[in-house]
Length: 516
Image (cartoon, rainbow, N blue to C red; front, side, top):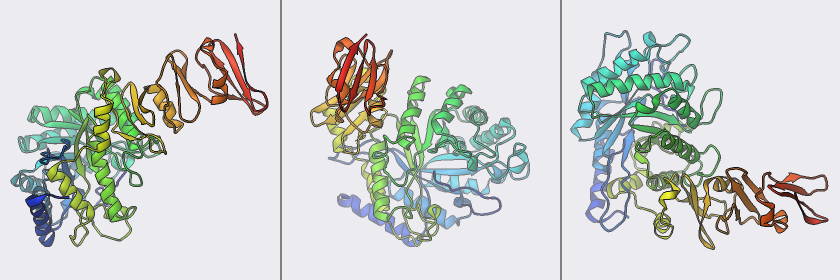
């Protein structure tokens, strides 16, 4: 999870034809005279002659925006507009607009940012967060303290939505509330839901056509200072969040592996994304999209070529999700290129405004659209989705270390194997992913063979069990389905209990079956 926040008292932590010339000119003109920061996503038109997705791209701005010079900010907006990044995500800090009390407002910076972005026809998403000291809950500290009264937060959101009615397209309620760094003293899904509900009511009363985005959840695991976004979202729903957002936002950062290659890893952003989507579907929110309101890769962990590849892969795979909303890339320019600090090196541009590889790639994708991948088209053509599978939860991704590709749906997984396209029920697919294998037969009568030489048995009544080939040799349908995994035995063998019997295997005796 990237960390760029507002500290107390200071700055916080091939292109085609004429279009090539236009994009190059836009980047060069801006980078020679200005600096840039983070944009947000807007719809992109497809390139002539090449199939593309409708993924919309933009840029997200960090807290630095409040202290950058107006010329730098204008340069950022010019760069976004000139390279088809048609949207911006702007922070609106309650703690800076109302620092002293509930009656006094300082709109100067926000007015300037909104006006400059609007003049360039950029769609605006604002992320409303930070708490003034006078509004903080007892025991909470810092600029991202939990507010004492959700109604006070709602009144501030109302003031923002009323002032900029018809100008701001979307309102994001807070930033990464599932981490202490942005929600002190601890992540609290119930308290956050109260803020979300207050903010939603405020926006809809002032500007009914605006979109309210909930979440901005970070891709983290449970710890003393962070809460897994899947569990956090579940508790949000339990607290009544369901009717108080039009879209959900997620920050799927993972610098060392691409989104697609890490999809099957436990607690990876992809697995969290799939699980959150399943929650949304179960709660009747299938019509709502998930927005990636921040994504980027730093050129400290990665070199510049790797940064470009990770961003391009993310956009390729994000575009394959039926529930994917806009993407906001973090960020346009490094704070301090090469200083070794992760937070200072997320830019598409270097600090001196020279262009990294990623800027050229992003400009290409923003202008022409994100192309659909060959593997996605192959899956769509050769394994046409069956409505009975439910919604696709994943893109086409590697499902084993051997490189076998697959795609996960609500009730089924589809694999491209050496024997052709095969499917597995979702519980079977989850088990064989953990075993780093893939099916070699169709699932039939409660079981399916896999490439590791074993067999998976599954039913709702018996559960899911992977059994090795030695036991399988002695199995017949008369035994029924496995009701246990392999249980180690003292002689170095294993025992598996089935619905109507037991099969043991040992190195000395091989497989022996006993019907019950």
